[in-house]
Image 1 (tube, one colour):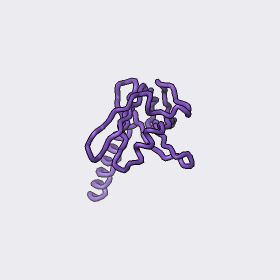
Image 2 (cartoon, rainbow, N blue to C red; image 1 turned 180 degrees about the vertical axis):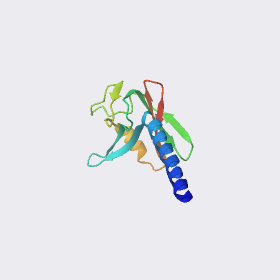
Image 3 (cartoon, helix red, strand yellow; image 1 turned 60 degrees about the vertical axis):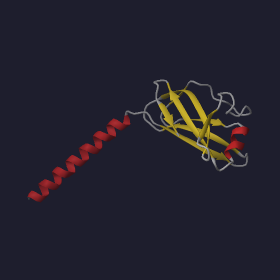
Image 4 (cartoon, rainbow, N blue to C red; image 1 turned 90 degrees about the vertical axis):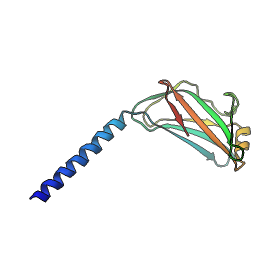
Length: 134
């Protein structure tokens, strides 16, 4: 009988801890930032998705191209990293739960990223002052 009581108490403690952590996490805002290759077009796009349960207003997106060999990171000017031939979303933009926003990178940035020693660092700033990194 004591073993059953102990097991039920342990299970109850585990379950209540799990549910409390899930409830706290549910109220946070989360963005998923992915850099995708767009096949057939030889380009890349940045996909920003709201994976949280609350709306997020994106104020600004900053991109830096880094070099692994030299440890350098070059911030890019705002007007140079989006493809002018594609539709550039207006910022600020509010993303509801599960919604996404697409940014197509400019050809010079895509060409720069073809070098295996180059990498892209993305920072997304929201209206509350939070910074989301990729």
